[in-house]
Length: 332
Image 1 (cartoon, rainbow, N blue to C red):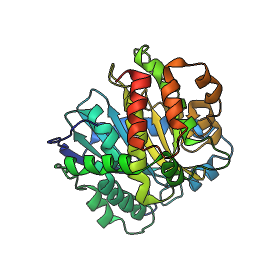
Image 2 (image 1 turned 90 degrees about the horizontal axis):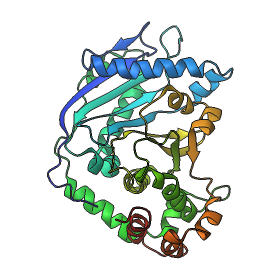
Image 3 (image 1 turned 90 degrees about the vertical axis):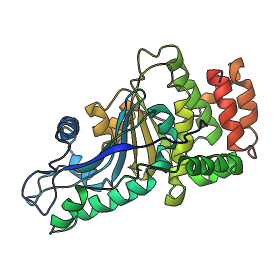
Image 4 (image 1 turned 60 degrees about the vertical axis):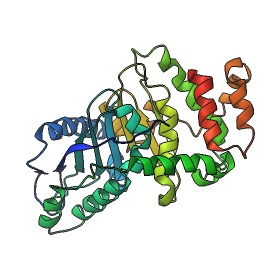
């Protein structure tokens, strides 16, 4: 893991928009008009696609809060926020979104540790949007959403040490337990290999970003979420250094299971639909939790024999897993 000493999140700007039960029509902040327009266009197109599904109201109403981060690997701006199913006073459905736009120096270095860096901010923002869609007196919460603090001086050394300690102290078996991987799922070893095989082509065919996103398991224990997200994003980041990618990262309870969803070509409207519609998710996301296919593939691939051998040892520390993963798939 590279050193992040001195990295700052600069010039944060808060925004919100959407529908809430306390108001009869669309609400939006005075700030972030351009960003609101971009996200609103994505949501509107996604909602139009979702409406084609007869049971869309059930899907929409049963979805929980969705945490997101939109980040370009070579861009200087990123957007983090929360999206939650909502409706106006007349029960016309449309989500409520609150977000923070900020500047950063090195997006690719920031991405793997972003769950830890933004954990407190995300928790605070999630609490505010959940209150906004439940209250009948939204004046105070909307005022609060106009200025949601984002700590510009994140303690990167502390965060880096916490993540590296997690890699050192957690084994494959330990991570399997944290993720709750059990019957009906592939093993963590299979998932790690599958992630590598699926993204390895990006290193050579980087002019064409993957058209399908990835769906990765997360723990149900909220105290373990940020570290688990960072582990997956650390592996994903291995393949992103050779070109610019528009990365979208979603964290949500996806059809009953906590998931980290990562896409590589921005936020097309079918991804919005996939957040609510399971059939749409099967069409545009690859479920890493179903990776039994990887065993036969690995047996024929000499370049990953070392990693496959290491992954057979459940007591292996995640630090060694990450290092060997990078060596085998990217020569790092």
